[in-house]
Length: 505
Ligand code: HEM
Image 1 (spheres, helix red, strand yellow):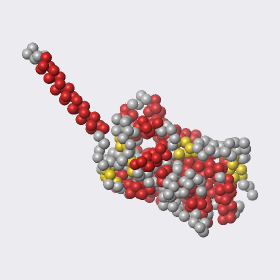
Image 2 (cartoon, rainbow, N blue to C red; image 1 turned 30 degrees about the vertical axis):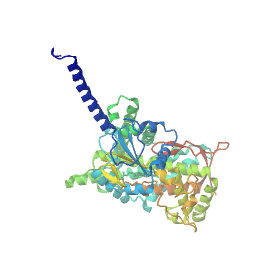
Image 3 (cartoon, rainbow, N blue to C red; image 1 turned 30 degrees about the horizontal axis):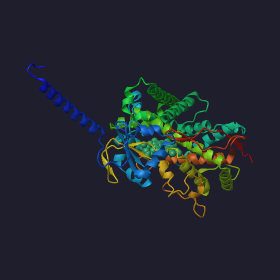
């Protein structure tokens, strides 16, 4: 301090510095906590953490708690989670409007999977790469016959194997999850690798195990996959576990692909691909030969194959589990389904896709299972990729957009007594099936599920064949089913046991 400076000067000096510091701090805090103008309404939450503590304290199902926000804030709600903006869509009309927009059709990045395999697949890509991957996937699935009667044979073959396995239980107690998941996943294997696997095949078992682990981890707070800071905190045991699980899923997919290539040979996959993997490799080769720029790369292939497994297996098998669960819980509905199938199909053959128009009650039951089961209650998150407006509100680039599909399926103005299982809602006065616009288990808009056709075929064939061949019941002396659900990215029925009694005459 200069000798000439007296106490007054010192005081003044400190004051100026303190004031400057105070103003800077105020500006930083203002910048951090400012709520940009014209955002959709919503709870303010805590400094820095935003609505995160309230979310962490939710005891019941999270989609129901989020659904309640619409009573106070309407069908478009926004809140911040650790300084990141989340926009919640709560009714059908706002979802339809939002997801028609290109700006709201991005996806948040899965930060942790970028550590082990940088890239994206059709589920996670945004912008141009997504357009090419989605177009390619849809065209290829269609080319392989998915959604058409030519593909029916694959599903029926797999369903016969499933019924064979169930028959082996001889009416004893069984946990249906394992059986159903094997069958559903094997149908995807016939799409992706052009073949099915024995349920005892070690690599097939490992693939399902890795898939289950991924979904379990997502359920246990996999939201951290989307938060960049965790990618820098690999020492955390939970982060380590996710990385390890991602790695083993990638590795097993790679091995299965290698096995497929060895078995099918190079010539065949290049000339006449009869599965998704072959078609992808051919498209990459063709583009390279033509010198055309493409987003079809080895990494996007690996991701997209994984996406088809991930998105296709868990969702469809969970829906089928709900179907069995409801059949056991409502035996009179099960009997009505069986009578309907017997009337149209008889007892000498299995139900076919061509019987579907004659089986409106079966379709109504599957639709009601999808409505009340709510397999993907909060859909798959979207990301806003460019500033835009929705219903006059500002939606900034980077915001995460979550569609609460559960709210749409539980709206009492559309579905009277929404918590009741009532397939008749999907029938008109003449008993004909009525498709309802506000049943959207596959999402809506530009990113709507691209496996919808395949899923619908699988659900119909597997469900109708199972009910044609078996009557499902709770084991003798067991407590009635409680219709409880386990929350993850999918909403599955809590583990339950049933007996499958063959209908042999
Ligand atoms: C009952 C079964 C299924 C349900 C309930 C379901 C539901 C969904 C939902 C809600 C989305 C998100 C839509 C959005 O982002 O707005 C989605 C996306 C997707 N699903 Fe499905 N899905 C099912 C079966 C399948 C199957 C069998 C496949 C595989 C062939 C599949 C592949 C995909 C893919 C690739 C996407 C991402 C589409 C994109 O981002 O462009 N899904 N699905």
